[in-house]
Amino acid sequence: MPATGIFEQIALQGGSVERATSGDAGCPDPRQAPYAIHLRLRVPANAPAESDVYLFTYADRAAWGREAAAFEACRSSYETTVAPAGTAVPHVDISPYRAFGPGWSPEVESALIRALTKAAGSGG
Image: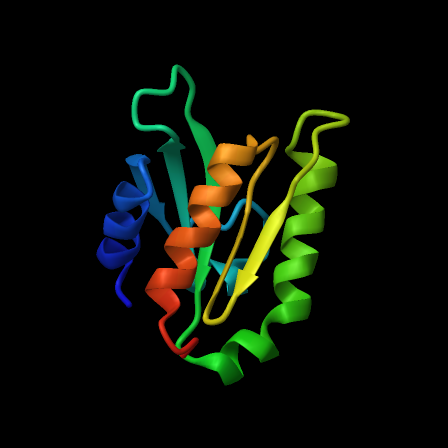
């Protein structure tokens, strides 16, 4: 599903995409950039603060599987070099998508899981 379909699913879960930057993986690995979109979300849509979400979309389940270790290395790099010290960097893995971000509220994580599950359909 194209990113716009994911954005629609986020809106259907009560959130809003405030900004989207293609190619920003949140880590210095240039091989991850083609898969990545850095989102700034508000959940709910009228929340006072935005949340960072680094969303990775893969062509299919096979690519999703092949990129698992590289994704985790990217998330780990973000956690140790970019995220504020002591901030949890949760992630979700729903084929053909993966995402991570610092300090998600339960509402952000839940909306993201529901949106990606809907967008994934059969999982690529």
